Image 1 (tube, one colour):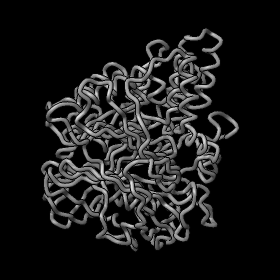
Image 2: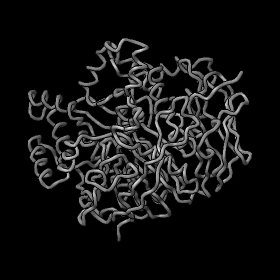
Image 3: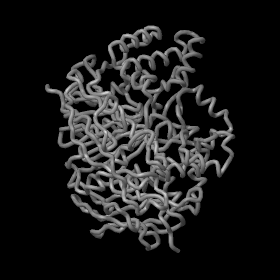
Image 4: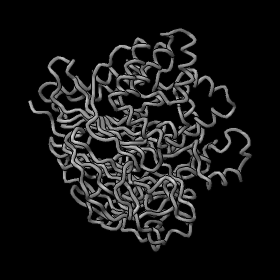
Amino acid sequence: MTAGLRLGPLLRYVDREAGGSATVWIEADRPCTAEVRCADGAGGSARSWQIAGHHYALIPVTGLRPGTETAYRVLLNGEQVWPLAGSPFPESTIRTPEGPEAALRVTFGSCRWAAPPSGSGHDPVGPDALDTLAGELARRPGAERPDVLLLLGDQVYADETSAETRRWLAARRDLAEPPWHQVADYEEYTRLYYESWLDPEVRWLLSTVPSLMIFDDHDIIDDWNTSEAWLEGMRATPWWRERVVSGLMSYWVHQHLGNLSPAELAADKLYGAVCEARDGTELVREFAARADAEPTGVRWSYRRDFGRVRLLMVDTRAARVLEEGRRSMLDPVEADWLRAAALDGGPGAYDHLLIGTSLPWLLPHFVHDVEAWNAAVCRGERGPRWARLGERLRRRADLEHWAAFPASFDALADLIATVGRGPGAPATISVLSGDVHHAYVAEPDFGRFPGGLTSRVSQLTCSPVHNSIPAAMRQGFRFGWSRAGRWLGRGFARHGRVAPPAVEWSRTGGPWFGNQLMTLTLRGRGAWLRLDQAVPGRERDRDGAVGPLSRRSGPFNRQSGPFSRQSGPFNRPGDRGREPRKGRKLRTAMEAELSPPAR
């Protein structure tokens, strides 16, 4: 029976060690055998598996050769379904590195609201940076492209749906009933992924550039697991359980499985059981319910080694301890995993450590101090009246980053210091984050730690990919980095009787506002950073879009380097053969070398 391709393909895992294997994720419209055939003879096939009436496959591709690039096709029940007929995009390819020592280009960002522009073509939040990157790579197939995309949270917005999605929801149920215009169940979550990943440019990009992902709050709901009181309130509502279970189910299907290597998939008992079952819905539902009720029993964090580069992607949402007095960003099991993964192999095991965490570790100083103060008053440091006020403020102002978990903030500093000192320490340790709807670079001072550090440590924050930030918040973040903001923040810290953090830090680049992506290039023990912003083709430099760096902001030099870009709306059936719209470009706002400090 003929099967159709409903979503994908997404190129997920590509082996950086031997260069011989990859995985490709798809959704079909019915049960089928899914196959990938590469132009060089490599390939693989897999039977689809079923969740809630949807049919998915994660296809293992073997026989790839190191240092090559090969086009591939996707077939369902023997019939080709990808590339799409009449597609204006280049063929999707799988590119393998020449070996583990090859340079690695990591492009990252977060917060992509995927709603399509209106019929007029006007996009209320500006050009989509992922769309724009895709347009450039499609227009210039030989252009330098990322080796991996790190999507650091808010891949979908379950609580901020588009007008088009709301119309679709209204045809299913009464939006006057909770959860109103937000998504309610698994089927409605699938709509968000269609809206996000059927965008023609993004669909092609994800088919040809490997991707790794982790959730943040909007993948489930704003403020997810902010506090114990917040969670108790949500669990008392009649709709929350279905929402969180459906959110975790859809994350496991659409995002988490693709983060795993073929060996990890083979060892995953749930994945094996789902593949064998006629219908895996209840298996995954039970798993998701257990993950919500007993977070210590499920690990969403993962490790990937890219030759001499180690990535540790850390779950900073589901793995929290929320009990006041014991609050922690990571539960003890998760914290032990992170430490063991960072230290595995001993000194000299890798040249660069990347710690992916959706929430920034180092924030503007004023914001950090307010969050630390809030954590103190919420646990009763200034009495019950202040605790009640602090809880209301915590939820209203989203005060739930690493700074709001002071012991966890210091523990991460201690781990970084342990990894980054002495012979064999990596050249760089980079904390990659998003969430805060602007970009900046900050560097900690480990002068309080005996002997200092050998590694250069940086907080690299990039957000949003496609969203907006009110003007008042822009000014607030600028104030947060200012001398006055630091002085006022210290006043909050004194009021909350907050101990000084384990490290001090300074902003060395930014803040930059706009839809943007950062790219970190790692070669040998060298590291180079670039920030690209998506702008309309006719847009000139202006304050608030790309902020010129002052001499005080560090070693970053502004670069021009504009590229022509293409973009396009949500993929409706009539769009499949449409030529991508022009008029977008990426503008390089910053380039810098991140070299280890001189000894």
